[in-house]
Image (cartoon, rainbow, N blue to C red; front, side, top):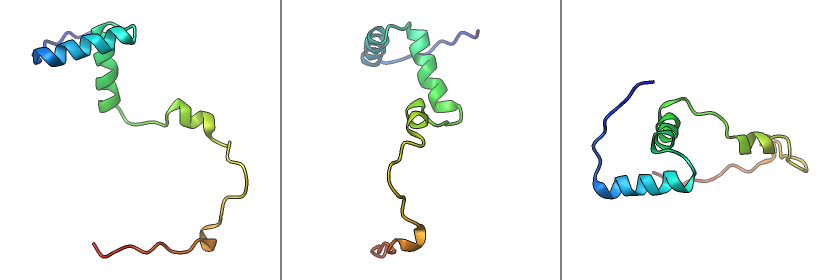
Length: 73
């Protein structure tokens, strides 16, 4: 695994340490998660996948919906 040196303001370093500790992670694991979330392609969250198909009732057809009116931009 690669090693990276990063210079941060002291207040930001303290916030990172605090949040990593609160999540029970090392600073490296915490920062890796944040960077990975920013850099890698987005995917559906597990929460969304869990709710997929849970809609109850009839979903309106597009033809049955009134067009939305927007103010001129």
